[in-house]
Length: 386
Ligand code: COA
Image (cartoon, rainbow, N blue to C red; front, side):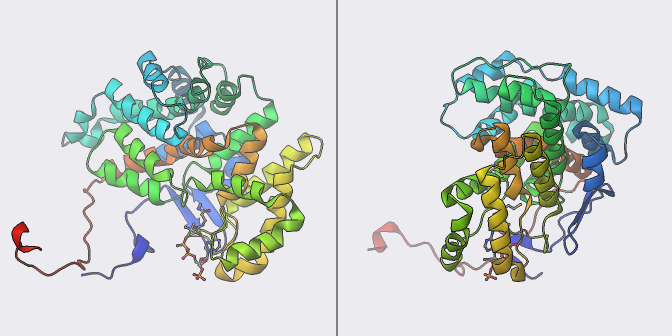
């Protein structure tokens, strides 16, 4: 029997050619392309297709995929009715998981996956990929209005993926800079090798569960604060600090109590997460565009990063992607409890790419365990148990 490694640290769970991390030097590649180049030159739509198909699309392929995404933004009114029946006080990630799982009831057909020719049914796989990717941002934005008692803003087919999300969420067309930054955030969160939620998607996918079931499993897994929920915690944490001058004292207190600093540390990166570096740069651009008025939160975040480096760098703990993404989203006017939903919208591209890869060479996941319980013993009748 193999050695038990808590958290499966370092244990390969699959073979994949979708993305790769160089944790020592702080690099991330999607299908071999550095994310810095994708953020600079690509769009979320193109990056999603790159992740799904393994190569940069031709102009025609990209136009087709983009038009499919735009055409699939409308959500059936029964889904809207279902969302209206959910408690407004519920967490948006639980709403998202519920709504995405329910999508499956409207688009049956996964029985084709049990066919021995499973991977031949590329039409079903592609159609469901488009439906899920296109509808997730719409559902997230719809919820923002529904939970406040209003009808949602209708999607628009003339806007890009990022523009339409911001338009539906905030009720007005975003300026080009804000849309560009949102697009960059979507690219940066789209994929990250075999993390907890992607692993959940692989495990669910390996049973030939429906794609909506697979993505719902991944959404539930992403919702935890040790994974996608961290950016929400970061903003709350920064708001606790009040001013950059209080940072060091606050940090000392936290570390003395052995508490975690949200948005810092990563199992894979031993240096600063490259996505955090890019997001910090985007935040600086955003600040410049708004006339140089640095937000209090951003100021505190920079001071905390500096102070934390002195205390935590020796352990390889630096800011991760969640450290700056939350601050950016908050500046854009996105409510804190929607940050992780936005992460899910983007990560759906990576989950779906991994689901497709799993199907192409499937074997159901069935790990083993190290049993540490009681030895075999005889049942004791209730009357003899005192
Ligand atoms: N704040 C303070 N100390 C931290 C830390 C953080 N955010 N992250 C790790 N450390 C410390 C641990 O306390 C441990 O110290 P020790 O060796 O003295 O006990 C050491 O660094 C190693 O940490 P460990 O928890 O073993 O790392 P991990 O690989 O198991 O955990 C995370 C990785 C992401 C779960 C962890 O860093 C964390 O909880 N971060 C905060 C949550 C977060 O931002 N998650 C989003 C990830 S993208």
